Image (tube, rainbow, N blue to C red):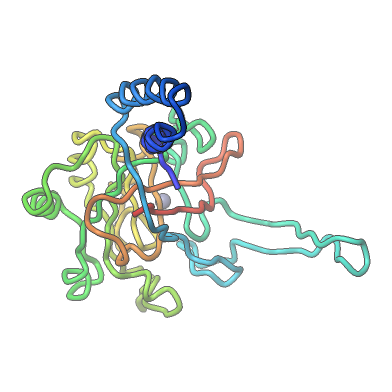
Length: 273
Ligand SMILES: [Zn+2]
């Protein structure tokens, strides 16, 4: 199981094994080994032993920001009648665990298909605001939370995804996930716009939330969306299982949609630990 940089490590391991299989093979392996070592200097080896699925299962009843139905599955064929099973999906892009592409909030930003793959397999750092979120469902991840994270864990690496762990994924089956009050306002945690600006300075690739929006529920102006997405960076909303991961050290793999011109879309998201 390999991510970028790991293949070279495997190459070197194989080469070492080959050393025991004869002089000719060993000579070739030696050459491969030094080549591998040269490449490793360019891309640090990373390996993993566990995959965590950061994706919620999505069905027509999955809660969403609009509160309106956003997914329908229509049976087109069945195995018994047609010889194979197939559905047609009627789907709003921003449903379930999904990506916000820069184009969602900027007319000249990349659509989902145009995001370079190098920005979709990235170091994952997790900022835990669960205590704050438990005390206040409108909690925001602020620059102070980023500063506290960095003093405990070291600087946020370049081209990383910074994920907000509020614990909200555990509420996905209850009314608390949207947190709608009597006036129709929603209440759930999100990133503060100033934290988004700070993370742009850190040269981050993306941000992720375990709630329905990058902005917290009662946001009147989508300040975080407007600060973050027009900078050419992606967001992920309604991710799951962040609590199973260490604060640093995992690699996130974002299987975003490659539909031409998409503003985002349901994504399969993994963490390699
Ligand atoms: Zn969004």
